[in-house]
Amino acid sequence: MSMIIDGTNGLTFNNATTQASAGNVLQVVTSNYATLTSTSSLGLVATGHSVTITPKFSTSKILIIANAVVSTSSTNGWGFFSTIYRNGSTNLATSAGGAGTPAAFDAIYSSTGSYQFTMPMVMQYLDSPATTSATTYAVYMGGGGATVKYCTDGWYGSTTPAVLTVLEIAA
Image (tube, rainbow, N blue to C red; front, side, top):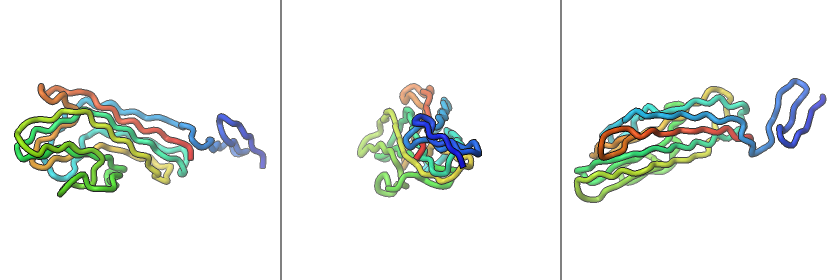
């Protein structure tokens, strides 16, 4: 069996398959989203913002980066939380965002008053999906007693585009 060892590309085997060197970015997929989404659900609901990647190797890691402007207007004292789901069924967050909230990466809370928070939301997660099948990552959000918005400028009700990027990284 012959193979080519290349410091940039990794290993190329005689059957023309390549295993990239660990740490190399193999592909990048980005989704821009500019649809204002709102909910007052305590549970997590899909924002509609997702991206699909088909990993080249089952050993690859997937770095997910989500950026958006979010807001909450609360009369009941607390607000926004968000997370990333894999394939619509696996919540990648591992801990609860606060009392009574589902597992979330990002949370905005207000303890008093009926005013609005508007702020940037950034989530990052390094996933190990262990597959070469198409994998979809989606942003989910929820709010407890508050109306929460994704892709908002907050005060004026217009949209501010969000970006969801996934990078396949050779392991």
